[in-house]
Image 1 (cartoon, rainbow, N blue to C red):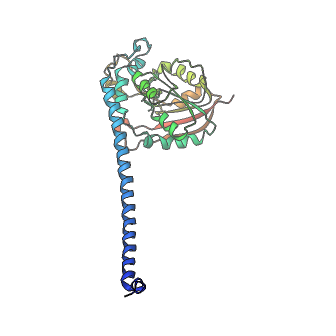
Image 2 (image 1 turned 180 degrees about the vertical axis):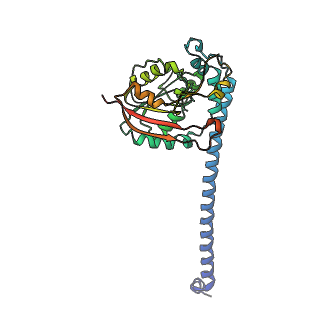
Image 3 (image 1 turned 90 degrees about the horizontal axis):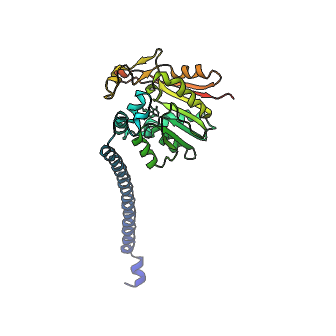
Amino acid sequence: MSILDFFQSSKVNEMDVRIRNLEKLLEEKNTEIEQQNQKIHAILKQISKLGKRMNTIIDLSNKQAEPGGEGGAQYETSQERVWSGSHGYRYVVHHANENWLETRVPTWEMLLESMPDVQSVLEMGCNIGANLKALRHLRPELAISGVEINKPAVDMLLADGFDGVRQGSIIDIELDQKFDLVFTRGVLIHINPDKLEQTMKNMAAHSNKYVLIYEHFDHEVTELEHYSRRVPEKEAGQGYQYWRDFSGLFHSFHPDWEIVREGVRMTVDAKPHNKGDMHWTIFRRNH
Ligand SMILES: C[S@@+](CC[C@H](N)C(=O)[O-])C[C@H]1O[C@@H](n2cnc3c(N)ncnc32)[C@H](O)[C@@H]1O
């Protein structure tokens, strides 16, 4: 058989088809390996994230929280003293694992829609920054600040790059700057009722444009006694969590502020003693 005959023979055609099939198979296997690699990469990323969270918890449990916290004795109210001390510290440890992407981002997406002209924010009582992290995630260009009474919480935020966070009490802190948005979430409920007027006026004094109040609502001022009982450093005659109409109270002190939007976050599946909705109101300065 001549060489020409050989190349024209069906044997060569057969080999060609086989090689093409093998190449196709190789390509499919490569794609499979690439997909597996991507999955492994995602799992490793998840493991590294969990490792970081574990380290945070270990760091925190190695730290000692003095009763009254660093400089805690200086605070005037019992509520400030317990939050700057070991009660506040236990809260930090308990919440170190919050998945803020799920618990906070959707709410902030919705709230920011009504405040498109915000460039700077101040959270009063920011703890370890579940809200601040959601805001940084959604709007990396925002100038983000916070005030927090608990030192371990402040240290964690500073270590996480939130340079605009200060330790202090929102009742009387005076910052040399104003912000487009000043807000509290789940914080006014822990302020001594006699200091609410001063605190709310301090919120307004630090705002250029908006104040957001996001707190547990009740028609009457209601002390959550089961909560107060769980505060080991509690003092006689003091409550540590109160629900009320905080937005209404803010408006009574600032009747000239306009209500931009308000809403309710319902807690349908909460334990009976925790039943209660969070009401939120966005106020805008009129002058
Ligand atoms: C229930 S946590 C809410 C934290 C945060 N706003 C959030 O939504 O995750 C209450 C926070 O307010 C802080 N806090 C309570 N009283 C304060 C005060 N007088 N000044 C500053 N922070 C205070 C506590 O230390 C705690 O971090």
